[in-house]
Amino acid sequence: MTRALRTDRLRTFAGQIASLVDQHAPEAQLLETGGAHLRELIAHDDWLPDAFAQPDPERYQQFLLYADALQRFSIVSFVWGPGQSTPVHDHTVWGLIGVLRGAEIAQGYSITPEGELREEGDAHRLDAGTVDAVSPRIGDIHRVSNAFGDRTSISIHVYGANIGAVTRSVYPAGGGRKTFISGYSNDLLPNIWNVSKEPLVS
Ligand code: FE
Image (cartoon, rainbow, N blue to C red; front, top):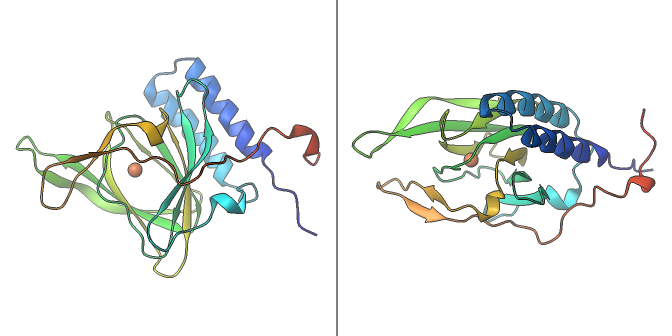
């Protein structure tokens, strides 16, 4: 018998982020407290429906899991096929990244006063269960890659906007920047509101 998905975990997390945003918490507090909530969410791998965990052979996928009605934040699953990697990109808003399955490699970048892209510190590995943060205040440009060449990795992100609709930049190897709007890989969202059908959890 298959166990019912614990969709309540995603609903609880969305509520926790909504509360923080409602309180107009300063960004540092939002990242710290929100990061603790995200760590709690990714500590269990029993809630993400399979439809939002599917890699694509061509490119990494960004599935919208939840969007705030006022577009103050959004929650996505990022699914990397073996060896897949993002371009160097920014976010323009705060973001938290928590690895649910597999592992990822993140390399931060900064722009020099001459306008050149420079690696910022060493690449760091994010294993399942760990959380990273980005924002224009603490460092907003990075490249993220699947740490594995032979399996899928999945991370859960929360951003301070409807991230799929935000105009952002990628930084090509040859210099300069190009704007992009990521959109989402899915048209339908998980139903986290079917409360009466959920198993009773203690
Ligand atoms: Fe990113």
